Length: 306
Image 1 (cartoon, one colour):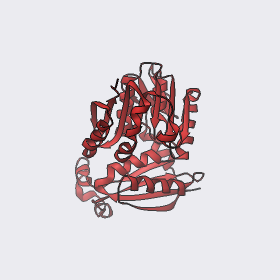
Image 2: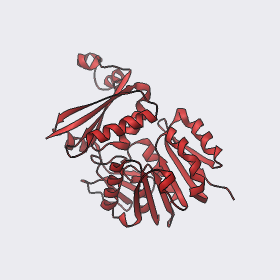
Image 3: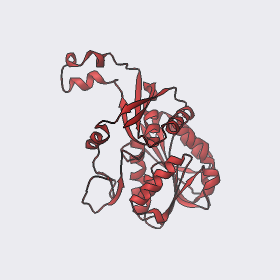
Image 4: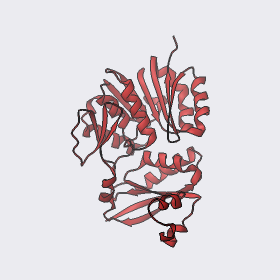
């Protein structure tokens, strides 16, 4: 059975953005070729002369991201989505699609995914693993769903939800992807969550994850954008996307956010922190806290308007 390898190469300085975009649209496994620190890494385990010559000759100024797409998935649609989101983020890239034989990789990568505790109340658990815990468990299949909690942006958002959700909240997740943030909010006690995404594949995956976690009754997933799908007001609004998208949508947020409510914006590279903060503050929202992790930023903002 042949899978499809969507191979995207970007300049190394854009690798973090490209990786974040890829984790947001992947319908399969992800493999990243990044050889910038090859010598330093090898020196920790062996002498540099023991590296294969072909590996030593790998480029250091580019990074290649492989998305492995299952035969029953529409790889052309996913490739178009990857192109669109890279272009929106102003990332130069080359992208090709190649057939790849189904090997043991789709099961082999499972060894790298294990239950992960986040904050004080959450645990992300792969679907094939049993995990005995008193925490609220979110069950995901990292091979079939994107946004699994392993990327810094998702982890920052989950940690913040763990702190924010007290029970009974109405939550909006913009660019919901796998639905993990909305599902986490419901598991923590939120009363209702809505997820919005422009990509039908994301909406389908989020719905499947909601069913897997038993929260489908309180989770509505919508295809579209913020302007024509969100309704009423929310206690918490999440946007774990990219800086350009946050800047574009944030003017619509205050009208949707209850007085005293929280807007959480993530997916922001630290070099773009100040411009996103300025865009948020221009709407009248107050930036209450700036969280950072490994070069990624999450803004915690409040609607303090009377």
